[in-house]
Image (cartoon, rainbow, N blue to C red; front, side, top):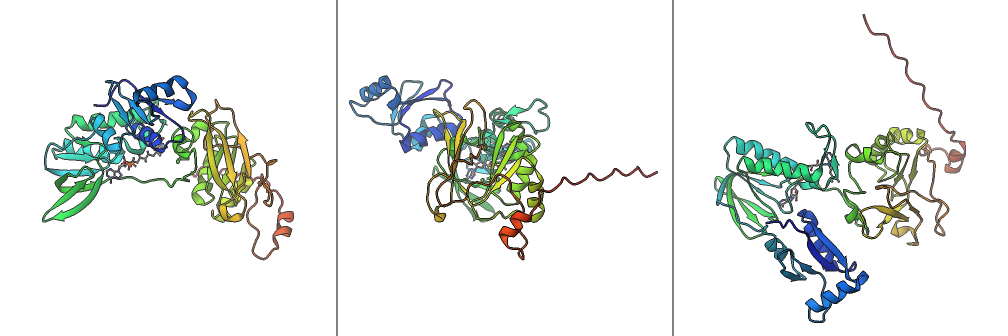
Length: 386
Ligand SMILES: Cc1cc2nc3c(=O)[nH]c(=O)nc-3n(C[C@H](O)[C@H](O)[C@H](O)COP(=O)(O)OP(=O)(O)OC[C@H]3O[C@@H](n4cnc5c(N)ncnc54)[C@H](O)[C@@H]3O)c2cc1C
């Protein structure tokens, strides 16, 4: 069973096994207390005492007093009681993935009397469990936290008799006569009449330092879902394709300033979108820059700094620009460019941006000639037809 008291993790910031353990607990929404032993002499001494003079990290103290040193994910799952075997060898339906899609399906199928098993490689809830706050789900007029929503959905499915195995990835599905055979990471095999794959989607990550710990708190993938949190803030949109431009335009109703960063030398968004963005006084586009890192302060899930660096092939890896924002502000996807900080050999960040020049006109002429666009007049409302 998932412990109700927090687990204590002694570790260091540079230790990959500590990060893995923290990620495992985070994914399973298990509370833990993190102690960086390099910042805490007493904790360092405690780790040495436990490990007979050795500094082994992570050293994890479980609520029942058991001590785990450098545990594997399997050991952690076993400790949390997450590894279980399903009650039956055969089900009417096996659902792969316990996100909102898998859990919702299970509620309907179990309610209709179909014997339903869900196999989930991580924790129930899927992406929604990592969402800070959901405001757009029908029926929750005051909104609901992602974690609570995931718990309610899981409880509702269980109430109808759905079986759910967590920390159990599906590794193979094969046909076995009329039925399907599902193989799991725990080495078990289950038969089913039907298998529903509800493994969701994965957002492409930048894979830069600081990104993972800020996802859901300060880095988001959905402007309509999370944009309202950024009223009056400066927001950074990563990616200059149609999605990035559309998300940026949506965010302009909330954010104070929006900067779209694109790592290619030119943005790929359609011309219509580029023109719309160019019309906005509070939007800027910075091509030819890649995000290098997100920085959080003292491990808190708040962005305080963000660096923009040129893509590796374009030369020096020196930061192009960096910015700070008050540590208290949940400025997320957000970071402000400071144009005074530039790296040698690179053009400074562009604050205002114009659509690309027509192919025929030389770039310099076009840039000089391009006037700032006056806002389009609003179309007059037509009188209603009688
Ligand atoms: C940060 C963030 C904020 C969001 N905010 C909102 C919001 O405010 N409002 C909103 O409507 N939507 C929001 N979304 C989107 C919403 O979370 C998704 O649309 C929703 O979770 C999709 O549900 P799903 O069940 O299709 O997939 P997922 O939620 O992705 O679930 C798929 C599940 O399948 C599991 N899985 C994958 N492969 C395997 C395997 N081989 N074996 C077993 N299990 C497997 C995964 O671990 C996962 O749990 C947000 C998403 C993110 C990331």
